Length: 190
Image 1 (cartoon, helix red, strand yellow):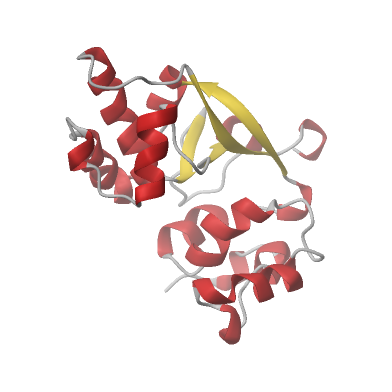
Image 2 (cartoon, rainbow, N blue to C red):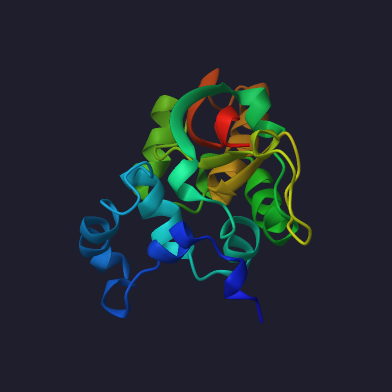
């Protein structure tokens, strides 16, 4: 069992209350925590921290970070840089499974997400990426690999790999860049 003493105070403030733990309770959760950690964007809270804060890999690798002093930015990244992201071992199979898709009929996602892949050549919801290099010295026992690693969006990254393969065979059009939420520690905080 993990030691919550290693969790940052800001991570502890991000914990959902029992009445806020389902996806239908996100609005109540957001209203409460946004004022406590205003630098964490709503979209990041919704897709990652709210839903996965109790998940082992998330807690082990990211609960020690001081969210009071981290920056999140919405950026455009080239496809190739995204295809080279480090993926934690526990989620590699997920990415690799989605990457094997050879046609849109094999995508297992919502109709809205599928339409976005087909029509826009990118994901509908930007995934969350950690700039591991910005963290400086890393604690022991964490699966953190420089320079960047995917925090949330493993299915989407797998589909991006699939889209790259489909584009090479003329089955899809892939955008040259894609939106991602990037989490960084500012230089002055290292």
